[in-house]
Image (cartoon, rainbow, N blue to C red; front, side, top):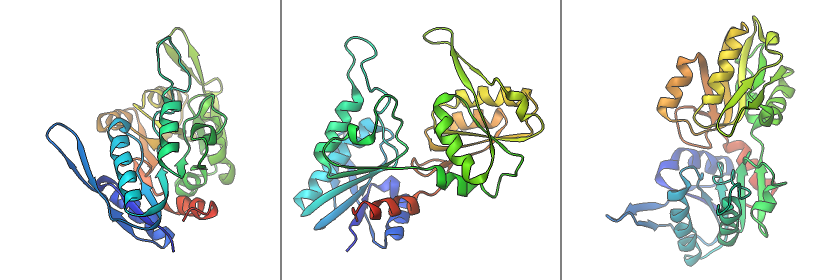
Length: 296
């Protein structure tokens, strides 16, 4: 029998989509906060496998609640706990860039590896770490690629003329993976650093975008500053339409308004993080990966 999908209140919609794709059921994790900020969680006990759906944006709050929920599930008879965290926070700090800094990727990865039996995530932002298995040693680690899902979602929005644009070299794998099944052209920008805090985006071949629809593609939209600058360059080069698609969107309402003001429309992302841009469901891809790994 497929394990139940347990979720916190703010993740009900995405968790229910995943449960439906797995042929299972979703069960809410009751949550209450004490006046001093401590959290109280209450789970529906379930033997066998428990899948916990919990994206790790806002990780400082979510991690404590997640650990409490996992402990309660094990106390209630769960023999295996699978964490489904479509967005995995704390991945950027994979080394100590300055003396005295914690390597947060290692700390959080070891914490999750101790708490869970398996981790399923989507396009984690790994830089120098070779694989997700190195982040959570000793447990099953499944990295789901969002590119096929994004490609399917935008297929009806693009034309053969559309050019997919990555703002910098780190975005190249995502841009090419989305473009390949659609047979679309790709343009990738470069980051030029003029100092520790001054970064310039350049599009060496921006003339290729002249008169064409352009769609920006990246794994993560944070504040959207890089995309706005890239859109400015594309517009100056004569691109007709500039939209954006990403795996994860952490942008605030104000950030999204700034993207719209910069002419970037539509802005689309998967539902790895709850928000206005989260219009591309991941449930089918997550369910397929969970089944393939034998975690259901």
